[in-house]
Length: 468
Ligand code: ARG
Image (cartoon, rainbow, N blue to C red):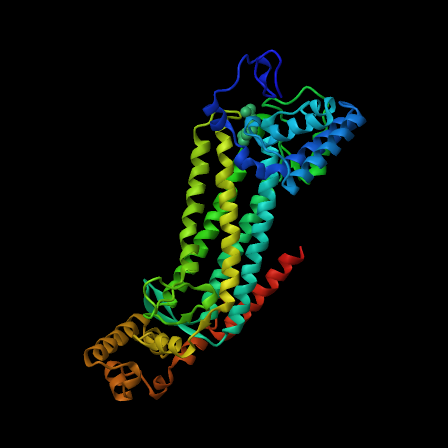
């Protein structure tokens, strides 16, 4: 786009008498990253052109030429033959300028009743909506993996922890289903984020609406939006939906990070409950014996990006006066990064988990070591009518005695139990791992029956979500 008068060659250059400073051109441009929005940009422009023609604002011939031109440009971009130009600043101007080169005056009419401000807001919403859909699907896949693993490992026991101190025996399946519960809430958050993102800003113009008899509802229908925005100032400047995405992504990544941390712990010699498949671990360049949980560590580490991106998006918005400001161009790279980070993390976790193996005997042994049945023994006394606080004290004294003497509950005789509290009977000797687990047969508890029911309920819920 050369200008014979020696002024600016930009699509917006009419009032400019010279070219943009070179470093400014590079600083201002977003084409290196917002080219990723080409699909959304073209879809939005096609819907806009259809509407302009339907409303008699441009002719049907012009609309047809625009649509054909945009489709050809989309094909070029997808074939990798489209020449993106830095001097054309961003994806919107790159496509519009290329359209004008292709179809001439018709292309010069596309931007009627539209601004890049409502255009970029529309593109970014379309992108974020698709990202929500992908996140929901990937979360569901991972939830399915956790449910299947809970079924496969239905008999595996590990110690449950509080304060990272062994607390009470639990089923590994119960532990896995705790993550399934977190990821279910994550799925819900993306469903809710998707509902808020799915509102059309186009038709807001630069900030105040447009002067043409446009049909916003028709554009919304064509692009699959549920509603149109209600305030043009808000519509062009609002990036709450980006924050919504980051927020849901950051929390989902925090959940993955917690799971990753447990996997890392479980695979240590110190815990020894789990083993990673070779395909999901790495070696050391110096220590021949090492098998490192890099994948889990990266899952944990990548949560930092998602959290950082959330803070970046919030900070980006906080000082902006209405309406659109160029600051908002800075919303994209972090959004893309969070989308990519979340999706790859969910997928790698889903691939890794089924390949893990668990050391059942080791888990069961650890589950009852360190007096982990103490609560069960106190509950035993309480069920015989002893006030729970007294039962707690009596069993605490037994623990202290065993520790002093280097013994465990299993070594105690009935007389020794009775010396701690007279309400103990011979059946106290039957309290073991299986009894401890089976006793917690309440909704949400770790009894094998309760966990099987929870697992089936999770599976049913997931199937129902998928059928929607
Ligand atoms: N590249 C810009 C962005 O990402 C597009 C909107 C520019 N609008 C403007 N009035 N300069 O926000």
